[in-house]
Length: 392
Image (cartoon, rainbow, N blue to C red; front, side, top):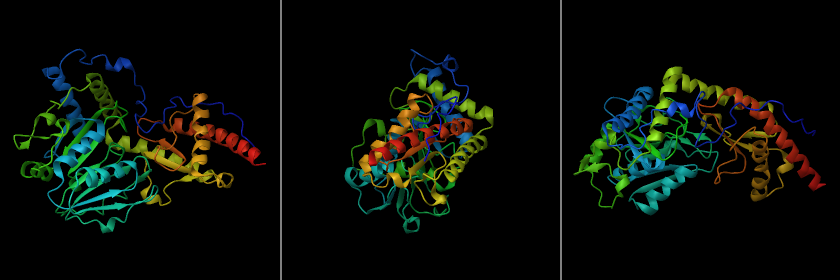
């Protein structure tokens, strides 16, 4: 198999990391010149900026007016932990897990919270559990999109409208890229660093009226760390939902989040963001269809993520390698692309099978993806040729 020549065109923006993700087109440090730096986030201006993130996020995402939307510390991880520690334990719990982050929520439910009547439904990377087994008389914990596995739930038909339990949804790597069914979700968390390309360490949460009722009436005996506490005097603490955060946020990151939201609004809001994501995914799909040596990790098209697209190598020349050898060999490909300034950070997640994970969120340009693919092919064929030479 001949090695193709080195491509002549590089992506204008070679950033394909699944978090932190590429900045939006037109981003500049100059966009952040109005950041409220060196001042208190408790000041009226600082609080107003934090509340602006909440207000703009609610409007763009179409979050119902009766939901509480707030900012919490610790990125999506902190926000989802807060949801679990505050809400779970009033009834049985079903936890769904098919990738790294779902595995962490399962560990928390079983090992840390030690929840009674807790059932775990798991599947290997590239697959999804049997969703028909979920009992919605229980609370249900799941990721909408498995960031590390490239597996997304197949729509919302599996979630009933008349559920008795709460649904806790980690939506960080799909929100702003898909249209979430808010009437079927009770606690939804995300961060600024994914589809909108913001900075890390800040999380957001949206709570339905049912989730707020649970907070106000269920008082678990467990100790809850300060940064997870969403109650004050036994009731929902309104402050994180009004721009008064539980700890000190970065107002530079806040300004960056506002800038990203304004960009999203300027280009047409959620429908356009979703369209950009779909265009990016379609570009990857077309490349996979015409490239014999690569395939999606998820064999079922219905569960393939449109944002964190995860791929595997299916070339027979690599079949004899152990998983560790394959991982080490394939990771040379992103390193070769990085050395050429042609593509950054698209190796698989450290807990996933060997392969590639290419971010296709709304801040990525389809033209940059199309420029990336020839570089991956160039690097792949060099690695394959060297492997064949070693085998010979």
